[in-house]
Length: 111
Ligand SMILES: [Zn+2]
Image 1 (cartoon, protein in one colour):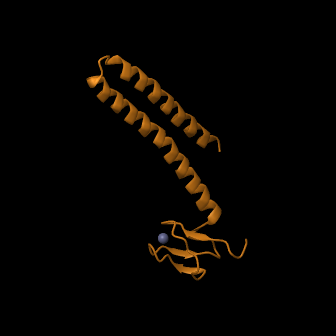
Image 2 (tube, rainbow, N blue to C red):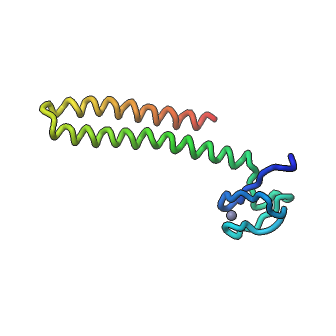
Image 3 (cartoon, rainbow, N blue to C red):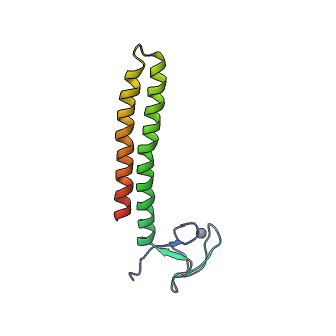
């Protein structure tokens, strides 16, 4: 265990830097003990958690974009002279986006 390891509050992920090895989280009051590894997360653990959240956010961006594209396509179909065209194009783009979201979700499960 390197001496400058960064600990995070187990409860709220607050960075417990420059604090005594035992005490209470200044953010949420959760009791911690870095020597006994109680009530804390080490930096690697927190980083993995952040990575997972970031990937989940990345996947949901795909799905949100797909929904936006379909809404735009739906609106365009009202004003377009050929109502089917924007729907078909939008459907294809949304399909690709959903596929991208599913792929990035599946990749998340592997790691
Ligand atoms: Zn806390």
